[in-house]
Image (cartoon, rainbow, N blue to C red; front, side, top):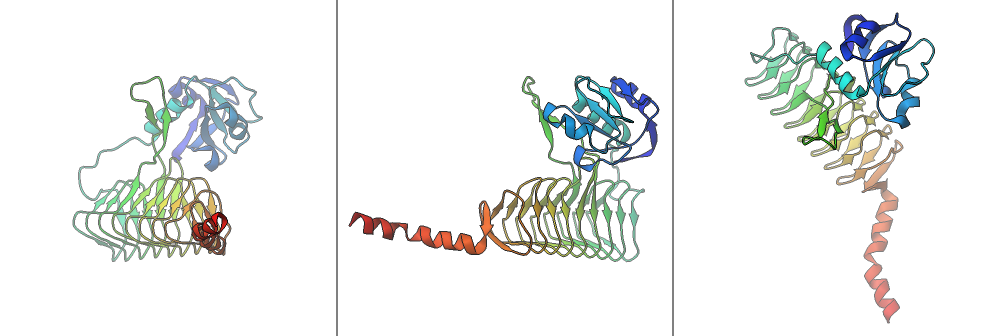
Length: 313
């Protein structure tokens, strides 16, 4: 998420109650997670194994729970609870604004676009030209939709990321990392009925040009999907996955978070993608293997009773 105007790091320190060390003249231009940061961004880290990655990332201002050496030119904000400090900043600069009408006055809708009965269009949403938004679709705030997009009934675009921190000592132990990202849907995309596309925690979930979803597809936060992909019914994709162009995921494929599926890969129905896979190949199984290899394995498994009987005889 980018701020409307740069914010002095001294103001950020005052808002979070953190101790400021390093360059006190910096201006923050946005809030982001480690894997999404660009210069000027604020990020946070509260696990020691990620200290180095965050301190050496592109982030300019880092909220951290340990007094460490400040990287040259950067600033750190030291606080006992970086997670809560980060959430406080999100709530301050991207506050929840209740919606009192179906289509927000701040939404921009292009020429020729059809908004059907029961559709909710949130604050600061942009929808391009010649789109068809079918009944009872919900489009959350700050979503951007291109031209010639079709979204079928009951789909939800831009709900919060599924991202929680465990607080084991609390009665209600799951602490929500409040989302401030967006969903961006490029031109010529079609999304089936009853799909859900979550916004990024702080960055963007992107659906590439020409991609088509069947019904009941779920896309997790911060996922980037390339052009001309085809997802059949009940595909589920975890957060921050990268799915390159021309990928086909057949029905009920499950994709783990934080991985890459290469260009032109095809994953057969009912498979589970646990780790990154190369493009240009067919895959099957859970966890997936190349389809030809997996089919050979299954053929051998079917012969086990026969081989066992021969051994006994």
